[in-house]
Length: 114
Image (cartoon, rainbow, N blue to C red; front, top):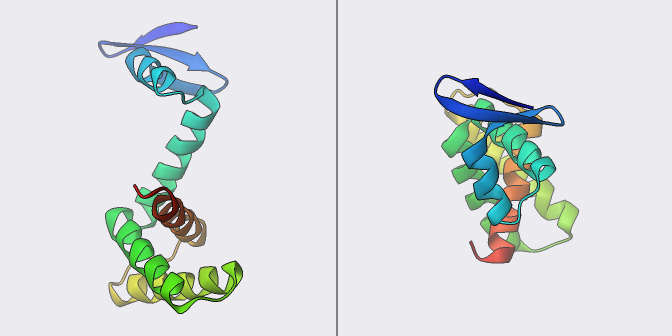
C-alpha cells in the first residue's frame, strides 16, 4: 500500500515503511525488504548504543582479538570486554545487544575486506 510522508512517496511492506526510492535502490543492490528491515533495526540499535564510537571500538577490538587468536567464542568475549571498557571510559551507556551487533559487523567487514 503506497502513501505519502511529506513529499516522498512511501510503501508499507510487512511492517516496514520505506520511501520507494530506497526500496528500488535496495532491490537493485539485491537486498530484500526483510534484510533491509533487519539492517534498519540493527543500525538504529547501534546508533542508540554509541554510533560511530561503538563501531570504531568494535573494529579495533576485533582486530586485536584476531591477533591474539583463540576460539571464535574467546575472540568475541575479548572484543566485548575491550568495547565495554572503551565505552565506560567515555561515560557511555552499555547496550549489550548493540555491542554484539557492532562486533558482528566488524567481523563481517574484516572477512569481506570492506
